[in-house]
Image (cartoon, rainbow, N blue to C red; front, side):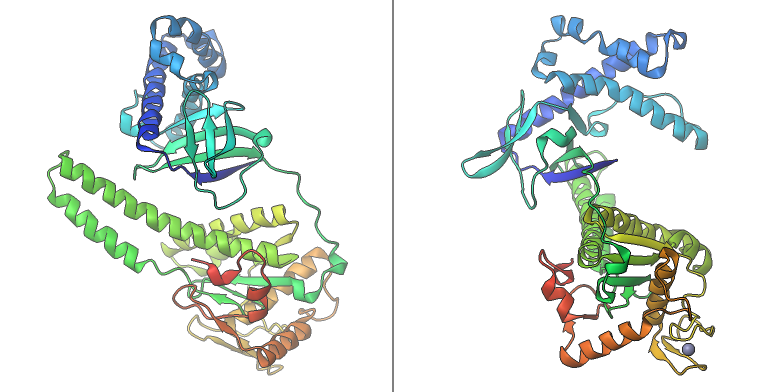
Length: 430
Ligand SMILES: [Zn+2]
C-alpha cells in the first residue's frame, strides 16, 4: 500500500525556470521514446519488456542529445517508463470509450516528472527546510508537517498544477500498522457511531454535528471568472491569463473540500478507539433517489475511505455496518417507526425515547458495529445506549457546548473533545 505525502514547493524564479526546463526535457524524451516504442513489433515481448527496450537506448541517446545529461538518471528512466503506465491506463479507457493510441504530449499535458528511489533529500538552508534535488536545485518547501523518512520514499513526483504552483508528492511504503486496542478494554467514551447524511454532513453519538463546507462563494467566483473567460479571444494572452484564474478557482474549491474531509477523518481516527459508520455503498442505493444517488454516495465514500485509512494508521477499530433502517429503528428499544426525511426528531411510540433523528441513527450504527464485532450485549438491540445517553446529558449539563465556526449548518461540538485533541480538533476544520 502506498501513501503520498504532498508538499508545496516555494521555488525561486530561477528554480522555477529550471523545473520547467527539466519538465520539458522529460516531455521531449517521452515523445521521442513513444516514437521508438511504436517501431517495436508487439511480438517482441510484453508491454513492459518493450518499454524497457526503449529505456535501454538512453545511454546512446545521451551521446547526441545533450539536454538528457542534465536529467538525473532515474528521472529520465521514469519518463520513458511512463509509456507503459499510460498504455495500461489507455487500455482501461478503451474498454469504455472509442479512443485511439497514445499521442505526443503537448507542454500543457505534461505536468510532472519523477525521481525513483534516490536523487533527493531533505535539508536545511538558511533555517529553511529545502528539498535537495540532484541535478536540479535546493528548493524551499512549505512544511506543515513532518517530512517523510527518505529511506521509506519510493518515488518523488514533482508536479506543476494548472495554476502554476509546484508540488512534491512522496510515495512511501506504509509503515506497519499500529496495533489496535483490545476490544473489551475500550471505554464507552472512546467509541463513536457516525451517521453520514444529506442535510448534515455527519452526526455522531457524542452529539457532534457538522454541516457540509460552504462553497457557495467559491462557486459564484468560478461562474464569474468563467464568464470573463468566454469574453476573451480564444488563445490570446488575456485568455490564457484568465484560464489560469479559472483553474485557480477550481483548485481552491478542491482544496477546501479535501481539507474538510481530511480534518474530519483525522479527528475521528485520533480521538476514538472504535469508529462505526454505515456501509455507504448500500446506503446510497437505499436513500437517494435518481441522480443525486451517485453524487451523494461518491462524496460519502471519499469520507469513509479516508476514515478507514486514517483509522488503520492510528490503530483505531473501523467498522462498516448494514445501514438498513438505522433511521427507523429506536436506539433504545429496537421498535421500528417510519419517518420521512423532514421529521427531524425521533420519538418512540413504544418506549418514549426521544432524540434527534440523526443521533438516534448514530446510536444504532454504533450498536450494530459492536454487535458485528461480537462485543454487543446479547439482549436488546442497543448495547450501552443508556451509557451514551447519560454521558451525553451530563456532559451538556456540566459543560456548555462550544459553537464552532466549522461551516454553515454546523452546531455543537462537545467542548471536552475539542479541547482534548492534541493536534487541532474539529475547531480548526476548514
Ligand atoms: Zn423505543
